[in-house]
Image 1 (tube, rainbow, N blue to C red):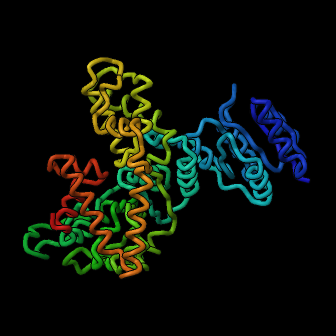
Image 2: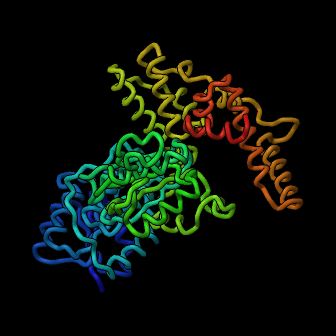
Image 3: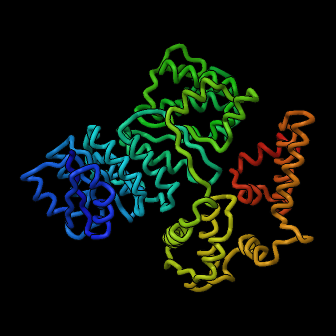
Length: 465
């Protein structure tokens, strides 16, 4: 029977873990990392399960020392202090797995069995700091942190999926900063923001005289990112011709400048991102399936803010401090009623919208304490409508419109079996209402819809508004 050590300063956690594992392993528990480290001089367990934050030596310090002395000894990190720094440090230090409290008993049993049958990942130095701008305690964000940690030692292609404003570029930067390419360039380009006839030159560069207006040689983003990471945002908007060119580069690891005759070696890690349903684009012939499989080697799903509302208070505090630092003023506190309104709002523009709202409040709030009166009307109006009776004509209005829309969709499917036209009609209505609400100001309408300025301009043109 394998030997498992439990290290935690909380007696209740040691008891829970012991009860969960004692029928599978010989379990010994320690109340401090120092005590366990001393015990390692005389015996070596098959698995260590340790907390991170403990009096004296922390779990991460302990993990470093264990990794140096016993590089193949698997360790499972558990913590109530869940953030991206701890998650990345745990994985980079060679942890087999990282769990947040409270954890499922069956999960730790399964992990313990799996860990004792596996060799531990190679130890890495923990001195490099990770991107502390990423705030998140929600379980969905913990999965994101784990994903970044697990691929930190690899060079695989990553596809980040999530709605506009969820922080896809920030996650891409974190992947880069915690990779072996962290000392090389991180180059980002928004595919949707550049007309497709100019995008090829933007990506691959061009030679002098290769087309009208090419008065000098231009180095493209692939060359700028040499040795580092190229982040392709809004990849779903890439023109089919360029998709073919990108696929060729990913396959051959070389490219030509526009008008060039000499192949250039491409030593670049690709991270792509999209807020679209790529599978639907493939079905309609707008995105190459083979390119999708090239990009979708490792997928990271970012949750919308409305599905991780437990993170809103921490994000508000972070953005208020950031905004205060930007304008060189004291950070403002927020009263509970005002925070409650922010917490109830669904944030269609996600984190980007929340950050802009905090910046607005920081500038506009007259005192050092943010009250309900300081919250923007569009956020308060949502909350005020929720306070009013949600029933219209004796029916729940939300259910009513959702059922009506579902019924209409079913009718369309029966008649045509094609939702393309309906999808465009719905998008057109959303754009029209956003423009009405913003009194025709496109940048404000873009914020309402959680879109970029260039994206909304393109959509307005495409839909003939």
